[in-house]
Length: 135
Image (cartoon, rainbow, N blue to C red; front, top):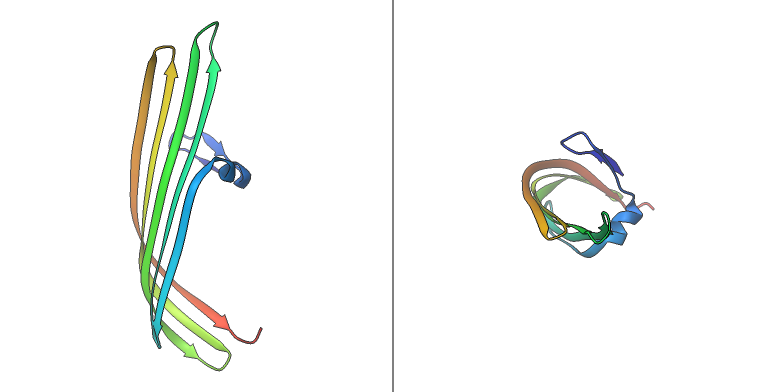
């Protein structure tokens, strides 16, 4: 996967790279139904980190590390629109809240600099999902 940063730099990271940097993840989902209404929610948490050591010139160590923690919470409600013997269609609406906390530190010799930022975002979701019992 690749994307551009806010400064226009391209960032490439494969799925294998993400899994390699993954320190911890937790995912859960719940749904409750009383036909024709359904309530649902899910949650995701992940923690990614990477650190590197190098030297710039003789005896001048450089250390860099980065950490990304993220969480997403979704909750909503749905209603059945079509109930036949083999097909169930459910329209739904809800909200999703995402939090992304990033930090980076670079140390050269005896000095260091740390930068961190937190992004919070709310999104509305709307959709249609279906299940079929014919397969």
